[in-house]
Amino acid sequence: MRSMSHHPGRTGILACPMPNERQTGMFALPILLIISLLLAAPLWAASPRGSAAKGVKLYNQEEYDKAMTEFMAGLEKSPDSPELKYDLGSAFYRLQQFPQAAEAFNQAAAKKNPKLAADAWFNLGNSLYSAQKFDEAAKAYKNSLILNHDDKDAKHNLELALRQKQMQQQQQQQDGDKQDKKDQKQQDQQQKQQQQKQQQDQKKQEEEQKEQQAQQDSSRTPPDTTDQQTAEQNGPMSKEEALQLLQAMEQDEQDAQKQKLIRQFGEPKRSSKDW
Image (cartoon, rainbow, N blue to C red; front, side, top):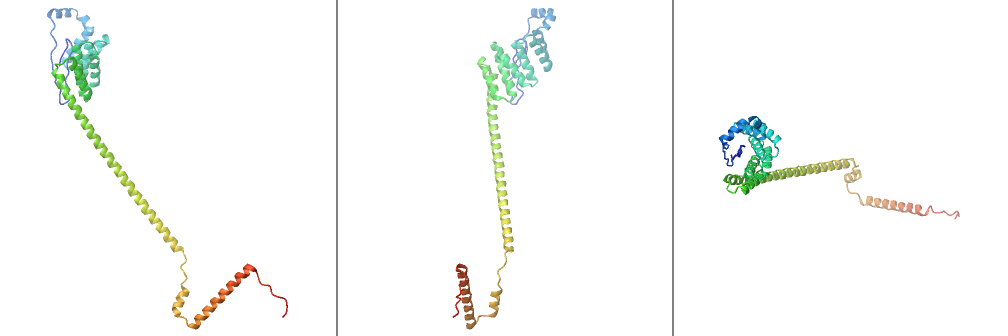
C-alpha cells in the first residue's frame, strides 16, 4: 500500500481473487523537523496536519474507526485537502464501507496532484472492486494507469476487474436464461390448466345437455299402439271386412267434403214447393 508523507496510502482488496497490494511505511522526518514539531505540538495538534498525524497513527494501529474520526475532524478545518480525503477513504475502506471510501477517493483523485491522483484512482478501483462494481473498477484502474503507466499493480488489478466483469456478465446471462425458462414453464402450466378447465367445462355442458334431453323425452306421450296391437291379435281381415272398411272410409271422406262445402257456401236452400 503506497503512502504519501503522512497518509496511509494504498489499500488492498478483500475480495478473492485479491488484486496486488503494496505496503510501505511513512517517510521518516528529519531530526531538526521533529524537534520543531515537538516544540509546536499544541498548535500542530489543533491543525489539520495534527488530526492527520493522529489519524495515521491510529490507522497503523488498526483502529480504523478512530482514525476515520480524526480524518473527518481534519477535513472540517481543511475541507479541500486531497490528502485528508485520501486518508479518510483509506479508513472507510478498512472498515469495509466501500461506497463512502469510493466517494472519498473520487474527491481526492480530482485534485491536481498526479501522484496522489494516481493512487486515489487505484484505491477507488479497489473500493469499487470490493463492492463488485467491476466495470467501474476497471475504469478507475485505467485512469490510474493514465497517470502512472508503469504501475504493475494497476495493470494486474485491471486484468482482474475485466475478468470478473466478464464472469459477472456470463452469470447474469445464465440467470436470465434460467428465469426465461422458468417463466416459459409457468406459462405452459397455465395454458395446460386452462385447457383442462375448458375440457372439463365442455364435458359438463355436454352432460347437462344430455340430461335435459332425457328429461324432455320422458315428458312426451308415447304413441297409442292399442289399435295396432288389436289388429295384430285379430289377424288379417276378410274380403268382406275390407270392403266394408273401404266403404266406411269413402263415406267419411264424402261427409268431410260435404262439411267443407257447407263451411264455404253455407247450407243449401230447400224448395218450398210441394211436388
